[in-house]
Image 1 (cartoon, one colour):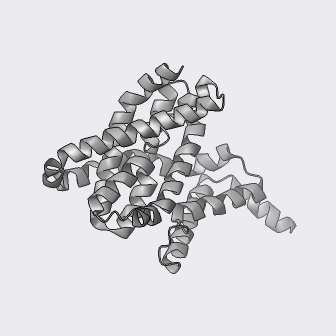
Image 2 (image 1 turned 135 degrees about the vertical axis):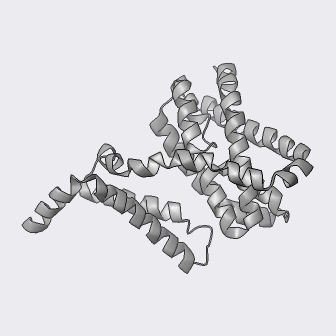
Image 3 (image 1 turned 30 degrees about the vertical axis):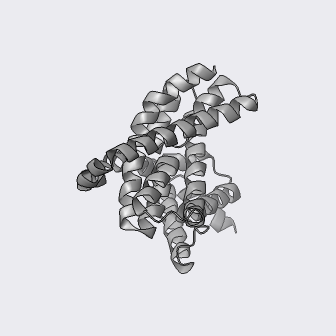
Length: 238
């Protein structure tokens, strides 16, 4: 046991340990999702978060130490967000044909996401900095962190809220859309992209390629609109 403790102390100082742990945890989550037939509840990100949380708790490792090693994954969020322009370009003809419905859904979805979060937070008596952290919760992480920081919120809390929002959206979207009898893959994908950003978009790609493409479009457009809407909405509530 003494040798194991010494080995662990050595490995814990290496940033590559937590990068490898993150990749392995997600690979395990994806394997579980595949074995479960891509069931909504067995979401790869949710499984990976649980696995990593248990490892950090058992090993008594701080988040700062973990992030020092896993920050390369965080860095990739930026290029991944920029890459959202690809599905938008590939489906530009379809987007032009459905431009008015897309704009209507975007304005409704983005407004409800921001205003409902602020209204509920205010109803529970949350202070301004927590409201600022809540406002961009339905936006993809790199944009949400920037919005939160510019509004005086906590980027760390916003990151947690973004992940929770994405996981909930990815879990409920398929059974909810089926219950509502929405069959149009464009509508299904766009809705989850606006409401549940990247994690929801990944789920949409697993279900249907067209849904995934429109989820990416919804996520990209929602990021731009939320960046403009959130400061105004927060000022109104404050």
